[in-house]
Image (cartoon, rainbow, N blue to C red; front, side, top):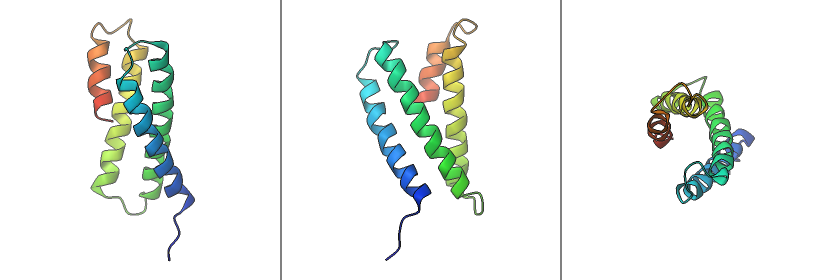
Length: 102
């Protein structure tokens, strides 16, 4: 019987947490303080999980690892869009579109 590595376990647990938090966020009004708080939790869980994927796959990268890197870029850009809302008139559209990739 094989055992699961600690990095894989962290990836699985944080990925599951991100899915659950993401589903809750869908039910909240956008801009609500709970939406923002849960959004930051979602981003932290997903980024940590994605970093785990990239670390684990650095020796033998696959297309899945490239997708993880693209997802990470979309997630960071979505956060930047909401943070730079004073400079971007259509930041909500960008934020929503980019978050939908995650």
